[in-house]
Amino acid sequence: MTGSGTSGLVRRLEDVARASFLELFFDVVFVFALRALAQQLLNNLTWSGAFQALVLLLAIGWVWSLTARVTGQLNPRRPPVQLLVIATMVGALVLSAAAPEAFGRTGLIFAVAYLAIQIGRSLFLVVLLRGQELQRVAGRAAIWHAATGVPWLVGAVASSGVRTALWTLAVVLIYVARWFSYPLPRLMRLGGAQVPAGGEFLAERNRALFVIGLGEVILAIGSTLTSRGFATDRTVAFVLTFAVTALIWRIYIFRAGEDVGPAIGASANPDRLGTLVSYAHLVMIAGLVVASVGAQLVIDDPLGHPRATPTVTILGGTALFLAGRILLEYLVFGHVSRSRVIGLVALACLLPPMLLLPPLINAFASGAVLTGIVIADNIRVRRHPAPISPPGPHRSSST
Image (cartoon, rainbow, N blue to C red; front, side):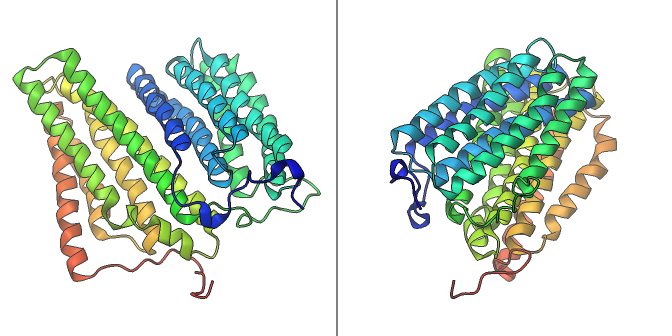
């Protein structure tokens, strides 16, 4: 039975069609969040620095993902929901501001802000949603976030190496817990498909996250050109890096990016597929963060002396994006197109010779691979358009 104070708080599934203005307002914060992550990576452009940036991305992405699900299930016009989202935005701004030095002097601020958002949101929902099925989900989430708070807080006051290990453990635990619907001893496991947001809504929210990632790349390209000036080589680098970004957008949106919603709707377990789609988008967002750093390196010194770090960053950002896009294509169509796999192999084969060439040529090689994929996509879809076929059992047409 629904509690008397919760009338109108929970959206009906058929009413969840597109993001509200409140949700779009919330998304603005994450442009800054991804900018902060790119800055953290640029400041520590090593393998350990890249892994640390990944841990922070997973934490920040988790904040965005859970908030997106909450706003998909609750009525954004209700004042308590608006208060919750705005409070989350404040916490996310603090979290993002602490990210560049999270493995240094602002580690405790990052950990406390993260836990305040996650535990605070869950407890607020427990109080707000009395008698609702979502209250059970929020209660379990609160317990799991509190449990993972131990490695977050201990890691925040530990050395950098120990902090990395403990924060990695905390992130892995919460992602695994969500995958198994926040299991607790002696309590029945929650059915993951009991409280999903609409498939098209989840698709739109993930597309919004991807656009935020593209916005970070554009911001990096524009700000670097502004700071470095309009010399001929830097202007060429600007045009080239923007073209690469446009190609990434084209490859993302082509078929799979547009058909995510129907695929989730056709799945027998839309919640599980929606979660996997979110993970695929996080891989692509990681690629965009790396690509934004690569774009800065290209524009900063287009014809500079060949170095391994810029080369790996420039090609690696494209490769990460393609890996996530391959996963997304499999989730939507149940198979993977050869052009994307060939593109990944081509990037790997290009890495050794590109180590001997300047950043501008590295960016050109990356763009050439993406151009080949776009051409192959257009040829393939004209000959053999792929039907939507998510992996696993599908819903019957009568449901």
